[in-house]
Image (cartoon, rainbow, N blue to C red; front, side):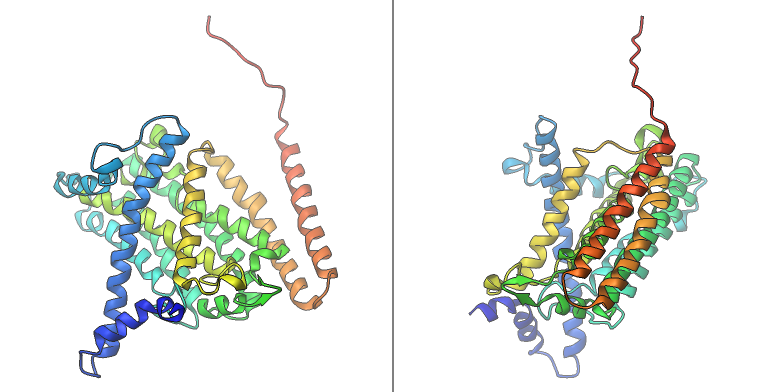
Length: 391
């Protein structure tokens, strides 16, 4: 029974395609997988917007959506109707073709990334040997979409917002890629299914997830910081800084085009969180051997939604950084630690089993963190805080 529940979606797909001729079944299976992705993640997006607005309202001691439907749960439907019926205004001086394509490129690129994510046992649309490389190639396309939106609008605020966004995304894209390289070094493969399989091993009932190693924990922390910046979430939401840039690269967008940017941002959160779960948290594997009877897809989506909760919690807690702080943090602190973590990962790989590699790896990473942090703090020369009052 547990095995059937774990493979319920695979069995349902096979049953549906069994009515077709044998020649059409492979293509029909792919189409059903695409339809499932296109339906499931936008539905999660709708629920997450309500959850985020209610969560932020709770953090800020105010009311969230509570008028449309029971407990405000139908608010996403009202927002969707508003976006569909709102007038689409395009500046007369804008490049209409590029202006129209930018949000489409963003959404399509994000959807393509879901194709290689193993969302459960045997639940991956395309099992590629270079799945990780394909995912990063698709996620990098979002930077092109952001620049297209800012440049085609013929608006100085939009262009400045796009340039800030591209600079930020390229800076943290380097950290994102390098933090994933450590996982590839240990797993010995770019296939996301093989990376999950390498972590789906238990000793004493506990899993061999990469986050439970010194190099894995360091890589995960730097990956989480980079993903926060890549998805323009607080405290790295500078590309959409309303106080400085009106609304950033999508200032000149309205109606459904703006809704596509909004959708793309949340879908990027889902995909990048799913990749983090796959690389460091065992993907669809259970947190202990005694819970392997729970369907694997429940573990994947549960871990992914937990990371989304952390995104929301950070948005309601941390203030926005300045642009110089953001760039210095990437190039002067996070990137050197990421490069050092690759060296530590190599040591871990070739030192063999035993407690010595735990001590050496931990000592190197902690010492580097402390020394680099203190060196950066000394350069700032922070003085005593003074208060001035208007007279």
